[in-house]
Amino acid sequence: MPIPLPPASQPRILVTGGSGFLGRQVLSVLQARGYEHVSAPRHADYDLAVADRVAACVRDTRPDVIIHMAAVVGGIGANLARPGEFFYQNLVMGAELMEQARRSGVAKFVAIGTICAYPKFTPVPFREDALWDGYPEETNAPYGLAKKMLLVQAQAYRAQYGFDAIFLLPTNLYGPGDNFDPRSSHVIPALIRKCIEAKQRGDSVITVWGTGQPTREFLYVSDCAEGIVAAMERYEGPEPVNLGSGEEIRIGDLAHLIANVCDFQGEIRFDPSQPDGQPRRKLDTSRAQAAFGWQSTTSFPVGLQATVNWYRSLGPTAGPSYTRAAP
Image 1 (cartoon, rainbow, N blue to C red):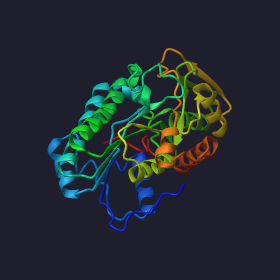
Image 2: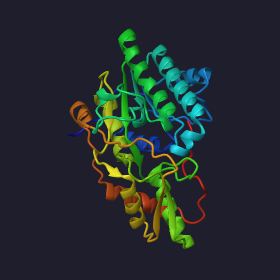
Image 3: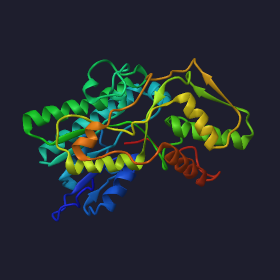
Image 4: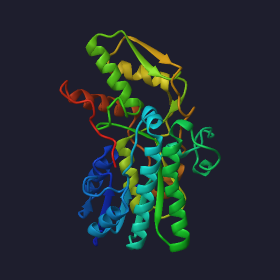
């Protein structure tokens, strides 16, 4: 279903996290859709973990709509090493920004959550109604709970103030421009980098964290950006909405698939002494389809090949971190 063009009287849109992996894609979609008044200030200009800087950001940009994507993010290793930072920074940024938006009369607030908010043992496929049926997987619970508080705040502000805040739950993202820093990257960029560097060095073995048995669902980053903009334009409900591909893959199979795409022909060893994370992940995306006509369109093989090609295009002079995880 085609999405209608922006209205003649265009809204001013504030995008937080616009320099990040997902944020850059959302800015690209907004530009392609014809939005002309979009602000995406950097962390250096407005530290969203500091209350007076949040107030200044909202005051200076005067947005009608806020898309809040700024976050401190990372893979299992980063979550284990920095749980306090992941909890505090994400909680404070979201809570203060929504409060300042409410005070300033912002017409709509689009909060971006995370699949890590779901309980550790959630019936598959994950349906939004299961969000409160248990505690999140322990390795990333601080991050998941901090982001889930945005849903609580959005629903509370809607009930008391009539504030139009919506909450979206993207699954694991991947694609060109992802973070390939081994200290903080998620599983797909981490495996791509391992395979390509092992092949370059002539290594015969790579090691993958965990048993290889858990499953994950992955969403191409540009598809997610399209979903966020569609929700901004067309969704006004209080209920959370999943954004996913509906495709589930076992980590062991993912590792072998990536090795094949990267032409690494060595052995893949799994290290069960390291955590697996959540046992399974796969989303029910029927609410997004029904509520604002969105579904993913990029197949996993196509998206994975594009991601590998992008990483290879960086060449041997690229530094250790290609997209920093920062507010």
